[in-house]
Length: 342
Image 1: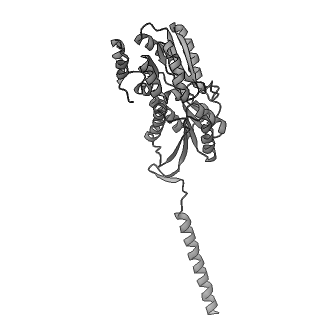
Image 2: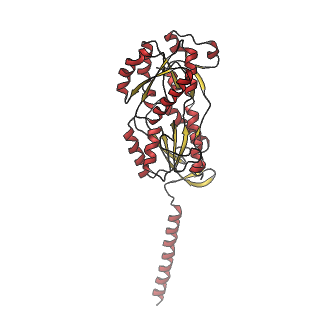
Image 3: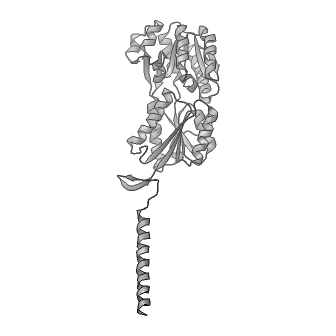
């Protein structure tokens, strides 16, 4: 009886020890998606998917601005957020694959850089919050109906170009301007929107538009070479195909002594003569601030689509010299002077 009593006591002790070990083990475990934060003990990692139609200086700046805005507000990749950037290399069909992958991976937020990327993202999910940037006309693109109070799961920033300012700049730089050539990608909705705006602005400015439509990079050289002799200068819209083909466009323009007016500083650095353009880094940064609002609980309908009216005059002095153009002093004194990067 004594032995049995001792065995019973021993069993109870062993049971208590085992229970204690299990409790301590459970207490030492932590979910894999929790990281230390100086402001609180832990927080869930926010997963952000970035879909970018193509790598080019303009869109890269927008992406950098977005990431920097998050970082400056305490959301840093590899710490409390995880950023997955995917490039479609100009293939619109691939933007759909990227978006669908983001949905299957259950990203917390999607940033779509370009109109095709945004359209594919919206077609792939009505649940995950989507932000867009470098989109010219979100209404025509079918992304939103009401820019002041977006009705779905998408909002963002638009890069609507001030076409009137570009034409005014062209008339002040080039002599006896009558015809303006516009190369553009017919596959991009935002490009057609800009061509339509250019036609309206051209009437007011007393100019004639010569359209140079293309569908891929291989068409740019023959299409441009065939019409560049008919124009007084080229206007290069905010078009991903055009931005990625600046080396070809610049060569043909210089060979024919025709100047080009772009819409942003990267275009000017890569061979355009001048622009009265947008700062895409600032545009991306502005979109990053929207992302923070969403992360911290703000609803899409309360985040209006925004744009920037602020422009910067940029001139490429190297290109001016190669064209033999003397830029008027009243323009030079207001401009940012850059040198050709290519």
